Length: 258
Image (cartoon, rainbow, N blue to C red):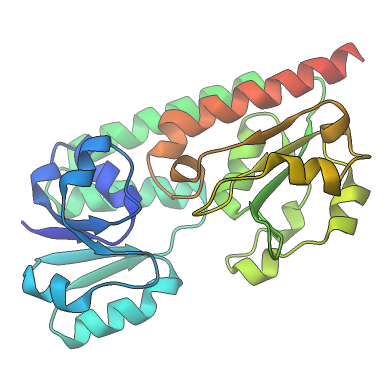
């Protein structure tokens, strides 16, 4: 089977299921696992090399998000089979991992993988439920304009013991998650996470923007890797939970002492 992956999470899923030999093309942003970089690059996120994809004669092209609808349409017009998923929640991400496993003929492996992720998530929720205080978190996905986090990140924050200050803005479309500096300041986060898709975070910008917030005063400002937190796949469960939990726990512990 020849599969082209337009985004990163499917690549990691195929490696975890032992079917990396199926991969015929990947996105230029693939970082996990490192050896995935050996595959031909055929796509960015909203742009793909349609001619190259067609020339590779894939059995299936797998993409993610409504933002890839134009790519999907062009490939379908060329007679290519395309699957585009649009998962937004942690539960939908787990279901998509299982779906990919079924498609490639490894439903049992996929089920075990999903069950291990679900168990880790449940254990994290249980531990964080003992916190006496849930730190308020501002997760910035982009800086100009300012976008707060997507649904699965908000759910991850809660599972790790925090609370997304923009819980009321977890819409699918980025434009519906736009926030203002005035809103951030008024909601006074205990933690600020910067996770900008495609570029490095300038942590000092948060200090300048939000000097009165608890996050700045306590120096609880961190950069998080987008290849872990901004792709809806295994990375969230393998590394994302642990990384976020340690930082939220630190803030929760300080708040309890104070």
